[in-house]
Length: 94
Image (tube, rainbow, N blue to C red):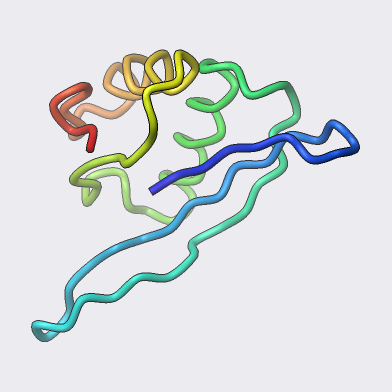
């Protein structure tokens, strides 16, 4: 799951959380909080998202992305599908 926002002092941030199951127990925990150097455009978000996936080695393990229907998220989903061959694009969005 991801979330992005702009703080009161106009800094853009993006948070990543992981949801998984281990030994039949659902687990949820934050993965990272990143300052997005540019505004929350879809292209800036996908660049940040892709980098985090690569750093943590979870690109091939990602099943879906949970985000709202804001236009910047739609752009992010489209571009993420091009960068990550394991991600199903719009079909992998919840």
